[in-house]
Image (tube, rainbow, N blue to C red; front, side, top):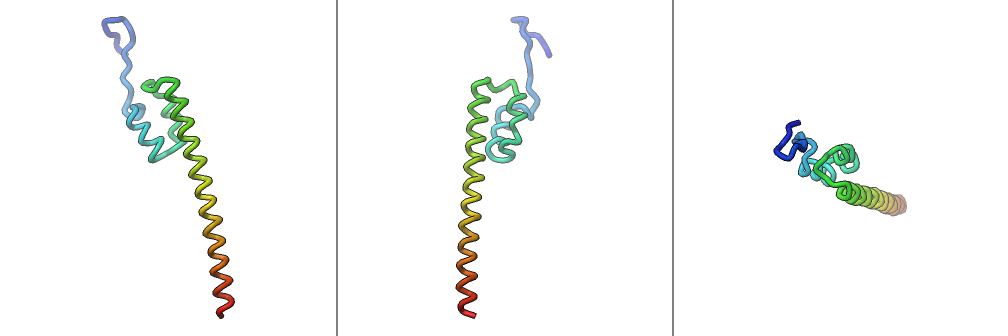
Length: 89
């Protein structure tokens, strides 16, 4: 770390702790698996970290619920089609 004129530590984040990289990983690639990067990064405020965590957890729960619903619906349709095919043959 280097010191600037104000005698405060200047910190340069590595590429994997930059806001853009973490944002893409949170919402498009890794989802909740990117939480360690989010919480380690100094580029986000504590409030932003809590907000992004809440948003990603909510989206993850919604995706899991939608996937479960779709799976159950497809299985019911499969059973119906299977019954219809068994009646025909």
